[in-house]
Length: 584
Image (cartoon, rainbow, N blue to C red):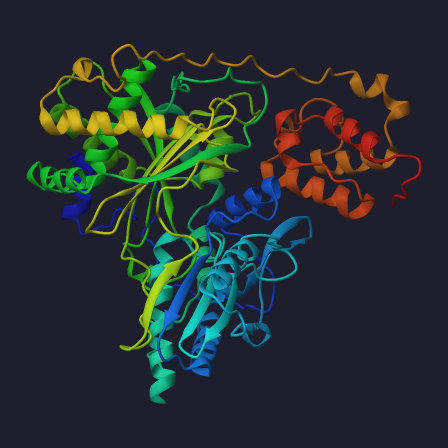
């Protein structure tokens, strides 16, 4: 344990009250919700994801099959009460005054549609309808005109219903879902019993907390923290991952995702062994994953990103919203350590990450690479998470059985999902039963078979460390005998826009486009790259939305981020502004 962490614990300070920031107040002031509010860093991150990938949520929808006696009016009332209680569920995100904002809608504008499909004759017909419900629940998200959360109730018979809950990450994170499930059960039970529901643990909403937390950061504090991170991560580069395809010069936009269960016996052995070694299951799994990266990529230093619940404070207890924080875990595996030694190094790296003040994620990523020259960015390349939380179980009444349908955890065929990272692993631990492992790898580098291959390698490493806990790093063999890997080369820096490009092409550039560009980057900056002028990804998204709204020309944010220059905009503008098309 580091001396600084020990002093904080002895002084009774929490890990959130870190050096460089004054101890936070113990009370969150309640905001006036009648005006648009700034987005929190997590909301801003998710808003950018939407701008890049369109109406694709970061979370899958949950469909619950309710069998037994259900009081439909009581459940619909409970759902409306749930949305009333948690303002993040009725928040939309328009662009106002040149920036994305959050607008909290009044509770009386939220509806819970009900459909009676009792005429469907067979279970097969009902199964097909459930699949259609699932597809509808995860498509066509619109953030600016209405809240993206969706709820609906479908009746298949007197004792057979399906509850649809589609809640994207911009409204609630992974650790919020069990809270919503508990609240919904309590609200339904109170409604059936004819009594008032229990009060919330505190009066403030997620928007209040986000504004309070943002106030803790002054411009000076941000600059000092960024300088500290630049020192800590100096020399860190992206990993040369094995690849099926060479890396391109563009920005990856899609990943193959593959989900499967870890063997139940191996899972229990990992839990038991971690307790015996006095480390968390996360440390064991992360150390094994770092072994896999080290042996496969031929490196002994790496940085992976992870997430934490950020719910240590009593101010966040019972709060629903995207509260999760991120961790930057820098690990050193030099010297051919045995796995037990490597385990302790990983534990120290994790403690250092938790003890480090973390700037908002996008601020740190952009601050370390303001001109967007890194491809891939070391902090956006590799993710590893262990998501531990109680299962989201709705228990409305003793005689009602509830099962999840349409979005289960069973192994599926690999499919493409929007994702920027080269490689990300999410392990889901519900305390008992096997771990569920979801691996995503970029389609830029990999074929659809890469996900099962990476998980096979990871299972091999886990098996070897369980059999020989002191095995040295050099003796770990993730790949089968004779199996070879080809490492991806580092891409060349992307070409820059010539300084005199605008002058040479002034006649073919629409004056309206030049005007929008100049307003976005500042006067006197009509050439060069967008991000060289101190702009952010949010600024880029707002620029493109303005072009679309004012001139009906749509330019994908992903395309612009590949080459963020005026040249890109002119090419898209002239392609999409045919003489027959009306603009302005």
